[in-house]
Length: 152
Image (cartoon, rainbow, N blue to C red; front, side):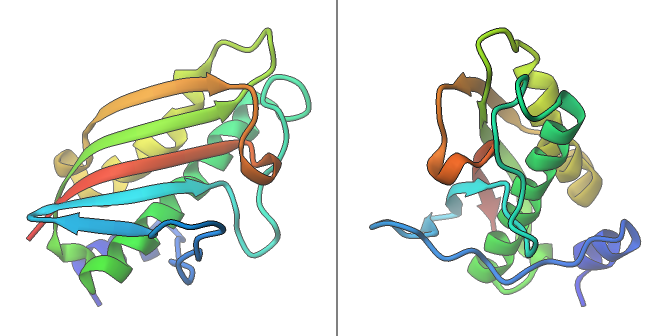
């Protein structure tokens, strides 16, 4: 098992089987040393976290939803590389929160994913980021995050 997976296990995180695309796109594309990972929604084996953050999902649950996106991103990284230790750094995250009209703490929600990347990879998990509130997300999921990752 990799150093990164050992670190995740110590945090109580087991990587799921990567989520299959729900439309006509690839889950990830590698170009040179960059891995572009398609948006991962806040889904898990129980169905995940759905709804509008600020209305029927509170901020703390939104952060958990972003963490689920992060776990799904890690699963895609492992599928793409075979070993999370081959990740050199997380370059950029793009975070999308299905937000109510009066909810503005979008960056704090996406911290649920950002914090996981730093917990998993240390300083190499620090990244550039976008955090955007949107009207709707696929299948009513609360959060979606995509990533650009440098790999060896």
